[in-house]
Length: 199
Image (tube, rainbow, N blue to C red; front, side, top):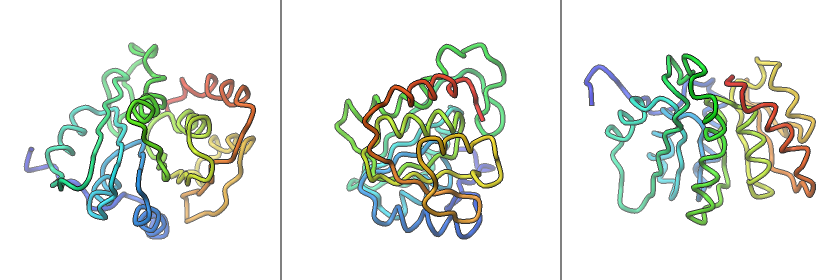
């Protein structure tokens, strides 16, 4: 691992958001995060039994994997979502692999189904955030906690409230609870509209 790269021990978020995530992770049995880094370190430090990390920047993901000191009692699943070449914060530099963009929000849920995993906490802090939110409403278990970073200061995320409203705010981080939605058709339509929005 390059010496010049330091893995933060907590996410780059306001203190209230970090504290809420830490409380959620302290009680989590299975954690899914879209975007990786300080939140991954925190889950590892707290000993979350199973965590799944989705990351579009392959080099960063390899750095993270090499830098975390894992214990045999925990399981870490690292998923590289190949959305094409990326720049800072995992943004795609072009649309050359747009046909694979849906794998960023959906790949983790494929892995969860294959491994019979059922996340109880989902952090949305990477790319394609609205699509990740809708995928979590489609596949997540009712009652699971969603923590959505940068929600307060980015109004273009607010149309997710057509399905569920935040139950609490921690500075810019919104907390949602996955509802029991019987008719998933409208969610799939929303997902289809959101899956090319990399914000």
